[in-house]
Amino acid sequence: MSNGMRVDLSALDEVIRKLWTLLDDMDKAGQTSRYNTEIPASAFGAMFKEAGDLHAAHHDAKTQLEGAIGGLHSLIETFGTSTSKVKDKYTEQEYATKRQMGDNSGGSNGDFAK
Image (cartoon, rainbow, N blue to C red; front, side, top):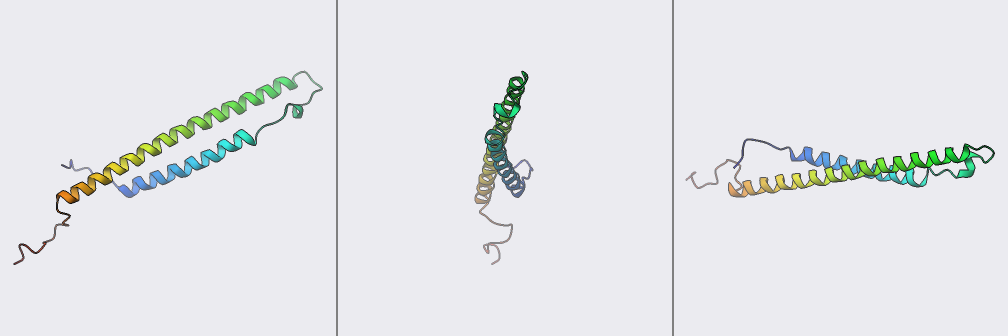
């Protein structure tokens, strides 16, 4: 039985589509942060004592960035999967309700028209 709530399934579809697009973008950002931001220790120089500290700080920042991107990726994936499941349940309920009502749109099926 309906409690009078209506769900816009097309809006849920749009949210799901945007979440999967965002997830794809996060994958690209993760790959970039992992493979395209590595700076070798030699790039920081070897002629001064702080070069090692600078390289270590770069490595720490890179690791933190990768962790943040991974966490966001996981959150977006979880939310997208959950949203998709909710949309599927609403779709199933809509179908069941239509079947229960005989799939009539409120018009006469001809039984009373005679």
